[in-house]
Image (cartoon, rainbow, N blue to C red; front, side, top):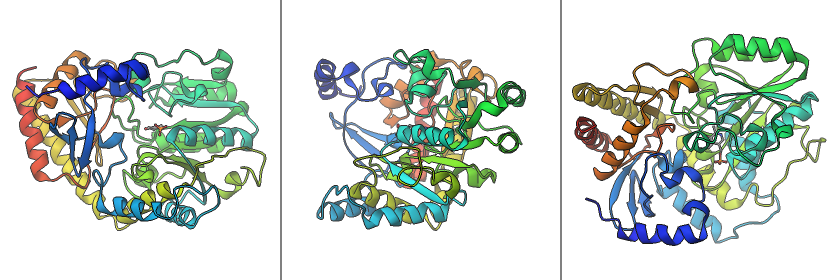
Length: 428
Ligand SMILES: *Cc1c(COP(=O)(O)O)cnc(C)c1O
């Protein structure tokens, strides 16, 4: 058994002074039972806890750690930048460098504004979509998570789904009355919404690859259909690429699928492990933001030099594309290994993957939407999670999260993980 005395003591203290002992709900292990461990350091693909246990990490701080933990380029950039000041509230050169990197990487983005989290990015993008179109209604999909924005906390994924609270208390019905929620991958549902509300629909916001209810892919032609129907109604197509941006390739999911959204939201990888979000798109739309236009959006720490330095260091390291080849191949080896381990153990799983993101659903049939994700065996997942933790492998403490491979993982780590899974699956 792993020792956990230090983590236990910290969690007991945390429970006294932080709601649920955590600053973001999924961290609390509620979906899998037990208490969280406390991380004290991380390097490459490895995290160490307060009791000095080490884990191969497939959470990667929920996506940002594409180069692994504490990569030299990021640590150096942050240290060097900090020497000259941690925040100015005055334009700084790193903001321009960051904007150029994003615009060069993502063809649909002509202008971009930085903010401090993925939630801020989606909140601002939606406000902008409404301001630009002068319409109020937004379509979102069941199981897609766009941060904790009031109007989008309906049938939301991630922690909201994990904890059985896809709709949040504290959000007045008026705030969500302009949100139309539809099942993902369902063409007729979207057609119906446009037939009923077309002239009032400001836009559709979606995760082009939904990865907050596990991970499922858009069906062939679905994203193209959404592009066409929004264009036909002069509504905006808003891709929430907070997770997929710079993860599925330099141009994110839109690059992989060849779709040009009107607006895109970023977070996670773009901040290199610091608190960053961004949203961007066509100049014509972005110019509606203050100070040029009537849509207000701001931030004391937006474009913060430390955050920009970290993000720029990561994006520069990704520019030649070599990292993606490596992590995609490792993720494929991992998925193949896990599928084989499950087969040998006689455990029904669906290994769903794109690029370096994957999900192992304990389910009998492939998953295409939230309702199908809900069919997975979450008790079995909980046993699997704790079994893997005992073996020194940390995966997200919920069936409804994706896992990530980083450039710091290697074949040895994958082999060790598959060996652990082979053992654990036999005990399920
Ligand atoms: C994580 C996530 C968000 C929210 O980002 P925060 O930085 O946690 O506010 C929004 N959208 C998607 C798709 C995400 O995965």
